[in-house]
Amino acid sequence: MKTVIKYLLCALLLLCGSSLHAQVDFNPTNPSEPNLYLYRNVSVASYPSAAGYVSSGGRWLEGSSHTLSTSARSTLYTFSHWTLNGEYYSSSSHFTFTLGSEDMAFVAHYDYTPPSPSEPSLIIKNELFLVPYPEGACTFNRASGATVLYDDWVTLTATPSTGFQFLGWYDGTGTKVSSSLSFNYQMPDEDATLTARFEYNPANPSEPSGDGSQTNVQTTPRGDVNKDLAVDLQDIVIVLNTFLGKNGNEESSALCDLNGDGTVDIEDVVKVLNVFLKK
Image 1: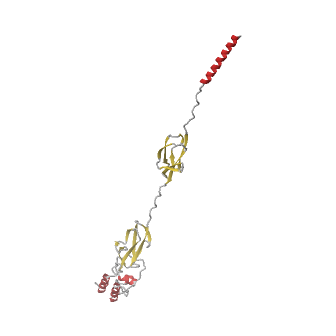
Image 2: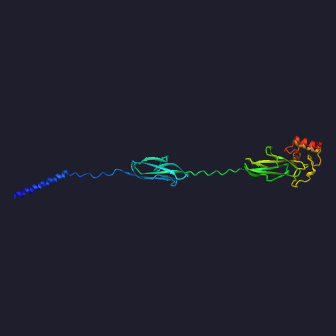
Image 3: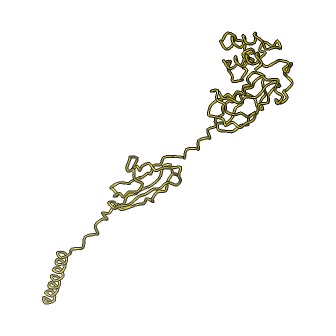
């Protein structure tokens, strides 16, 4: 009996020793360390939204590098700058950045720049005044004072009244611009006045028929400025006084301009003298 108890005690000691040894040697492995890598959200857009193409955003690893770019969708928009989280960031349409420790929102800003509309054609119209000299000496094919486009050509025709001989067209400076009753005139870039000058000469058989408005023109001799049907000393005095500025009558001045040059001068005095002397 003692022998059995002795074996049971030995067995129990062995079991206890084994258990204690297991407890001392137990060293389980540590659990996995938590993931220290963090990801951040990156958004990319354009403003206005229809203005430009932009790179795609995403959820990227903190500390990683990425490249963003943008380009205009049409010629109506011009790239201006990038903002990051509402603050100015870059004026370059293409750049590389490193992802920080917080989410990032990039916006490509564009300016609306439509092309300027074509300038309308500059249309310049100036007035063209036509003056007969003497008054009633002719009619024109167009109204005096009518407008003409700058640099355009216009046909001008003067039709003499009975008893008037055409001398030429003269511009506002007194320069002769044409010797033809009908000619083409190029409009300058300002208002213009052209005078059709005539000489009162009813004895000239080559003059075309007038418009019928003249009366007794065939019976008034050339140089008869007082219309008494004779060229005498009174006519010479009238022409001389007009030349000296002593006569202000417009009709008389027109009759005294025997050479039709627009002024009463010494040549007109000589002409009336020659008619008086029958030279």
